[in-house]
Every structure is written in structure tokens, then in C-alpha cells.
Image (tube, rainbow, N blue to C red; front, side):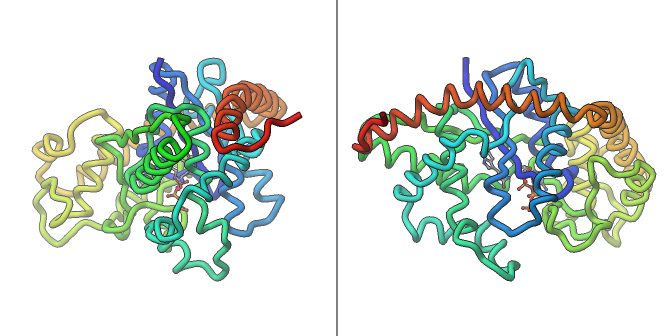
Length: 327
Ligand code: ATP
Ligand code: LTN
């Protein structure tokens, strides 16, 4: 069976982009592949944050992933720092990656331009991500479009390590969904919807009050024409609404466009489709958060299953590098 792995940082609240671009596809993947989903708390440390907040958001993210449909009896759900092999393999990846290669990463350029304090960890972030993936002999990595470059780097690092030290890692592929791969900000539809975006009005959160969600769609930026057409370059706002509606209803954005002659009904239908997508998730989240002990147990079991696989790969990599066997 194919192996699938993906990860998400426990930072900020999950938004519609994360849901449609990534997490929703994981729910389907878990039934088709041997799947690993990891809350990457070590990645979250690349930007300084309060320990209290990190602790709380790690549990919240795991709970939310479960509410969206990841089933701990079907997939392996765990926290990155619970499996120490990630940090160790990450060092091997840092020594495999070239400085110039990491410097070209768009996410680093973006985040370091905006940050007051740029940690060395923010720079080596993709090496840790490569470690996350390679430890599990991963065939496929379902992510949103913004992770394409990190996945290319992971492939390059795996191939380079294999060429230098002998066959050790599976070279993974990215799977990027057609609909929802790039959900844009409702107020600035040429920017991706992002936790770090400037306007609250442009982001829709998975746990947001549903009436507020409807209001945000009503106020979404479109353009001064009135024609409904799927054209990302000329009509980014309208196309974003069509993409979101398509992702929520499993249809094609270009054919959906044919059904509308005005912006108002398109906004209303998109809002409604999003509300119906979010409603059951919110209900399930409320149920699950009532029992935080259950989540702790799920994560402990997940870490144990993950470590059993990761430690085998780590031993193989250590041996390939010429590090002396332990113990
Ligand atoms: P940040 O704004 O801090 O970069 P983020 O909102 O991009 O964070 P991540 O935690 O980096 O969120 O991403 C988690 C997953 O969600 C990744 O697979 C990413 O590709 C996907 N994703 C993030 N934003 C979008 C978006 N706007 N559209 C589609 N997928 C997205
Ligand atoms: N860098 C990713 C999160 C991430 C990830 C991973 C995704 C960390 N490790 C492994 C896929 C596989 C992000 O910023 N969204």
C-alpha cells in the first residue's frame, strides 16, 4: 500500500485555505493509503511564541484534525516532537542541503522579510520538513500549492543522499489538489489566504461564527464589471469565489461560472456551501474538546506507531553515513 504523509503547524487558527487545500484531502487519503499526519510543533518554534500558547494550540490542532475527519483508528496522527528521530534526521538533511538552495526558498524570503527576528531555524525549516517526509518512506505528500518548492527540495535531498551514500530514502511526490489548491484572501484576492495575512475580513476560519462567515463572503472583493467568468488573472476575486464553491461542492469552477450572471447569487451560494462544510466540523470539535484526555491518549498511541517506522529509517541513514551503531 502507498504511504502518505503530511504535516501542519500548530500556529494560529485553521482557515479555509488549510481546510480545502490540504486537510480535507487527507481525510480521503487515509482510506486509500497507509497515512501519517503530523502536527509539526518543532516547526512552530522557528518563530518565538509563548509556551502556554504552543501547548494549547498543539492539542487544539490535533483535535480539529480529528473533527474534520482524520480517524486515529485508520491513520497515524501524532506530534512531531514526540518522535525524536525527526530532529536527528533533520541535522543529516541540513548537512545534505546547500546553503544557496535554502536561500532560494520563497517561504523563507517571505517570512524573513516580515519577521523582526529571523531565527536560523526559519532558514533550515525545509530540512526538518524533508526529514518529516523521508523518515516514513513516503510515496505521496498531499499539500497546498505553496509547498511545491519545499517538496522539490525534499526530492533533491533524498536523491542526493541516495547518490552519495547508497539507496536509503524513497523519493516522494507532491499531490496538489485541483480545486482548493490555492484559496485566496477575500479582501486581497491576489494574495493567498494565510494566517499571517493583514486583514481579518479576508480570512475565513474553520471555527468562526457562521454568521460572520456569511458576512465575510457578502463583503468579498470582486471587480467593477458584472460578468461571472473563471479567469484567475483578469478576475481574481470572482475566480476565488468560484474555486471555493467548486471545492466545497466537488464541481468544476469554469462550468459553475456558466450558472451565474450576477455576483450577488454567487456570493450567497458560496457562503452557504462554506457554512454547510464548516457546520459539522464545528459540532464535532465541540464534542471532542470536552474530553482532552482522550486526545492525549490518541497522540501517545500515534507517536508509538510513528516511532516504530521512523527509527528503522533513521538507523538505515545513520549506518549509510558511517555513524557508529548505538549501544
Ligand atoms: P502561514 O500563513 O503562516 O504561512 P498557512 O496559513 O500558509 O500559514 P500552513 O500551516 O503553512 O498554513 O499550511 C498548512 C497546509 O495548508 C499546507 O499544506 C498548505 O499548503 C495549505 N495551505 C495554506 N494556505 C493555503 C491556501 N490559501 N490555499 C490552499 N492551501 C493552503
Ligand atoms: N511546511 C509545511 C508544514 C509541514 C509539512 C511537513 C507538510 C511540515 N512538515 C511534511 C508536508 C509534509 C507548511 O508550511 N505548510
